[in-house]
Amino acid sequence: MASKDGQNDTEVSALNEEIQSFFKSAPPLRNKTEITTKLKDFVLQHSSNLGNGRATRVVCVTSGGTTVPLEQRCVRYIDNFSSGHRGAASTEYFLKAGYAVIFLCRRGTCQPYCRSLPDDPFLECFEFTDDSQIRVLEPHSEAVKKAISDHRIAVEKGQLLKLPFTTIFEYLQMLLLIAASVGRLGQHMMFYLAAAVSDFYVPWNSMAEHKIQSGSGPLDMRLVQVPKMLAVLRKEWAPLAFCVSFKLETDTMILLEKASAALHKYGMHAVVANELLTRKEEVVVVMSNENVPVHRDKTDASSDVEDPLIKLLVDKHRAHIADSA
Ligand code: 9Z3
Image 1: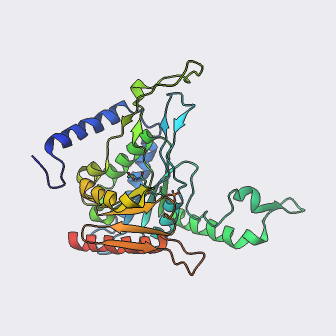
Image 2: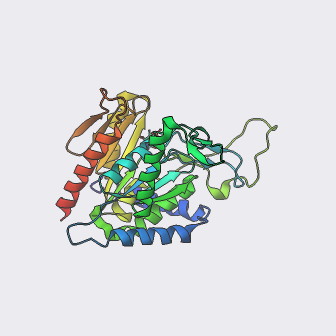
Image 3: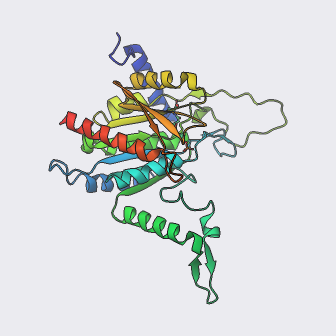
């Protein structure tokens, strides 16, 4: 029998089986208790205004690429392209719009409020004075001051919770923990899934334990498809939340078609379509009733596409909350 999102019952139960087997075979999260406690406190803080019309909206921004380890004691891994710039910039705009943000990010990728600093800020922005004090070098002083102060305010007010991941196993387990923790926020919750998630992985129980040895000819390795969690996130894990995913392609001819297919297949509220080379200039937000192109303001060198993108999504989320009420 076909369900309304185009997946039939057999497909749905096969997917559920794949998901269960993925989680069963994944190495358990080492800091699960700590993450769960942080999430519980964060959600408690931001659900205190629910029901009085002044509820905080919360967004989970995922950012950076997941890795696929090839060995359990990992020396080699497959990586997914993403600098984390999109997620970091979007987080700043969500915070500015009054959202509390759970920033689920790949370790070592771009962080909120660091975009305007040089690549190696610690080495490039500071110097020792004659009396061994540390001072910020003049050309960077405004940017450093603003970055530190904006970041500190967001963290101290409890508006920004950063949760780092590296592997696909960590990422999906953490996404599940987040979804399981935010239930009480209902429609005030948004998922903004900008992370570049691996499509194929080596199941933990069929992975070599030690470093794979070279010298015995070509490497033969079987990668299994990562089960698509978007549909279960939307329908089962967080059914009231507003869900936005991203579709990345390098061929513009298939981009919108693929984004629209993802919108329907996974029941997303919006899919942001972007092409690799132009992703910083323009994106198209694909929704069930319209496609909205969003551009960076080309007359302003410091502008970025995330600014108008987040404004649009905040409006759509507001409408979603109003509709649900
Ligand atoms: C994106 O498409 C992001 O916009 C980028 C951002 C990764 C391109 P940067 O981090 O780049 O600023 O350098 N993210 C989603 C990519 C992805 O894996 N999408 C899957 C797909 O296209 C769906 S979950 O199939």
